Length: 208
Image (cartoon, rainbow, N blue to C red):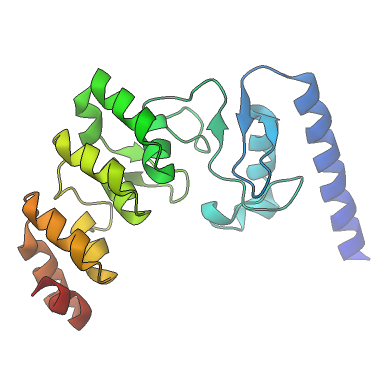
């Protein structure tokens, strides 16, 4: 009985969101649902993502109210925000380009302002600041990695956990990427120190 009431409540909320989204066509957002994204007004989808049911999930597990697929990050249909968005659920253009491998957009942004390569941006999927280079490395977007390094991205920049791009490729045994970062000036001692401290032979082997 309780399950039936809960499902009915969720259905009613989804229906209300759908109706409000169709009425409010200002500032629409595209979801990251697969295989087909949906379009919501920001206020409508934010209400759903902030609900008690969804807040029990990690950010990268929050669901679309229509298809129940992972919904984040939200993408602005007007081209997004180069820097951080006012909404915690909308992805900046820089992070989006590096995550999806959109080299054309990344090159356009860097041509306008090379300092964008060294700024930290709010990650919709982790809730923490992330650097474009780290995101590009994490998702294997090698064209973006080269573009960022070419614009002076700090190869030693660390995230909130103290992890750098070199830590990521060392942990995943990506030897070619490891050597590329070393050539770009990464401080290998950072990885060796972490590997020894955490007794991680995998990182020690890759770093040797």
